[in-house]
Every structure is written in structure tokens, then in C-alpha cells.
Length: 283
Image 1 (cartoon, one colour):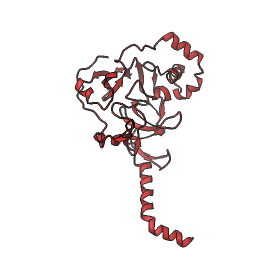
Image 2: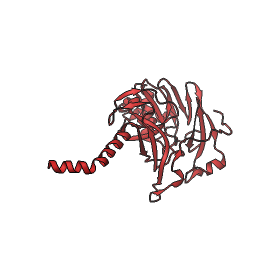
Image 3: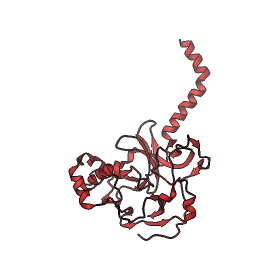
Image 4: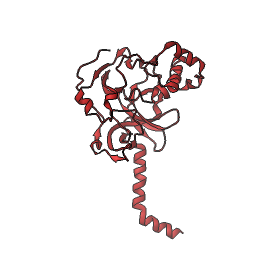
């Protein structure tokens, strides 16, 4: 048996070492993660394989959440991968608010630290060039706030009244449900946030959210597809230790609705958008 093991090692050691190094590399340095849903449309599609830099903010012990060195923290606007606090699945969302930020979310309008975001509608030619099957069913804006800009996707324009929004029914609905189990997701920010997370998970009505301050060591995540994203409005705050890395580019992509046919036009494409904001919609 010993001779067989030695022969196996001599014959296959190069390949085994290669696999071991690749596994360690993917765990601690860089990885590529599959996107399972459309919550980050229009910039990231279901079926994209995203390159993730795990050394963006520090160095972790492979296969653990233990950090041996840290040199920075996630910033507003970063697209990141993390284990969501509800069931541990790997998510990819955008950092909207960092520890200490005061956040307001009112009828799909974002305000941070008293500064309201501006929304610039995409031009017709830009919308036609989006990798979306049915762009006519949605509205697309460049959301600009505190030096960051991203393209967001909405079912209606920012500021529109949600047809499901009814203050009295919302309050009564939260009171009749057992929302206490959502308190940990609200991370001590109060009953109003706890009830809002409870409401969002139950009914998906998340165009308006009570104002709150992001606790220390926590981050507020949102998908760019604002009306179809299970983000912090449902899963709550994300712990710093749960964030793995910053997403940089699409390595390759397959169309999950078309027999996994490769989307060659998305291979090796960046996740950023042009800086020209066009005409701004006042907040």
C-alpha cells in the first residue's frame, strides 16, 4: 500500500499541488461566483460569472472568516459578495450605506446623511442597448449620490406612490403579525425597522422604509433592480465579517433561459457605466 501511495504521489503530485493552490487562491485571493437571479439588473444578469477580488480590503485565513490583516473597508457604491444573515446563501448586492450613515428610503428615493440622490433617466438609445429582454416594462435611471453613480431599474419613476402603500393597513398588518423574530435583522435600530423588514418579506412592499442609522460594523445592501431584490430591506443589516470581496467584472456569461447559451458579448466586460448623466430629475 505504501508503495502504491508513493507511486500515485510521484505520478500525480503536480496536478494535486495545482488543485490545492487553486483552491487556496479561490478561498483567500480571488474567485468567480455565479449570479443566480436578476436582482442586480441591468448591470449584472442571471447567469453571469463575476470575478471577485477577496484582497480588496484585507486577507483572510483560507476557508474561514478570520482576518489576519485589514487595510480598508467596503465603500458606498461597491458591488460585493457576502453570506446573507438569514440562510447563509452567497449574495451579490451593492453597498448603499456604511456604518454611521443615516438612511432614508421614501417612494424609491434614497437619501443618505441628509443628501438626496438625483435620478437621471437613461436616453432612449441607452435603454435600447441594455441587455434586458423587456426594457419597455421598466424605467432606468442613473442614481447619483455622495460621489457614487449606478444605473438602477424601477417599475415606476422615483417618487411615484406605491399602489400598495397604505399607512393604516401597513401599521395594522405589522401589528397582527409576529414581527419580533425579525428584530435581529434590524440590529437594534428599533421596532419601526423591525416591522418594515417584516412587512417587506411578507408583502414585498419596499418602496418606502423608515429612517435609520446603520450600526457600527454593519452595512446596508440593495440590489440595482430595486423592485425585485431580496436585499437589506428583507435580510436586514450585513455584518462586516460576512463580506467576502469586491466584484470587478464579468468573466463569462450564459443565458439561463436559452439552454445556457453563452452570451459572448458579455465575456470579460467591466461592471461600470458611462459617467455622462444626461438630464437630471430633481429629487
